[in-house]
Length: 168
Image 1 (cartoon, rainbow, N blue to C red):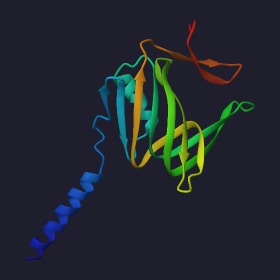
Image 2: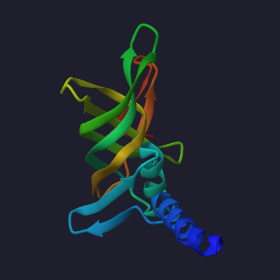
Image 3: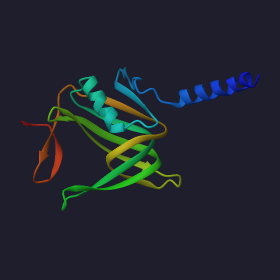
């Protein structure tokens, strides 16, 4: 008799836990007239999803914008050190994200900047070094270009730069 009373609890827990666990094989984007719409879910690595998308869809180059809920690490480029000074922000709202998809050494090269806000409406932003979707989702609109663009390392700057003319 006790087993029968426990079964509904077990089924409830199984389906509740199962429904909140993200299906990692689920496609995260659809084709729309303007390009692609990507919807990422809690725990998704934003930059990795964009790289995977660029490879899967053979994207020559693109611009993207996005918004949602995130945990984000921004970097501010220190030209004297030729490296980013990172700062991490947890449980933030992504008010704006803008970036480009190009190629470098036959791999996707994502360059993204963003602005996040906290519960007090303070804004922080910079170059996105890492980002995962927080509670909720992130929506990204991707506008694909008709030509392949590459990023080149410019030694005098110490950074990768989008090349649009005589790139070889």
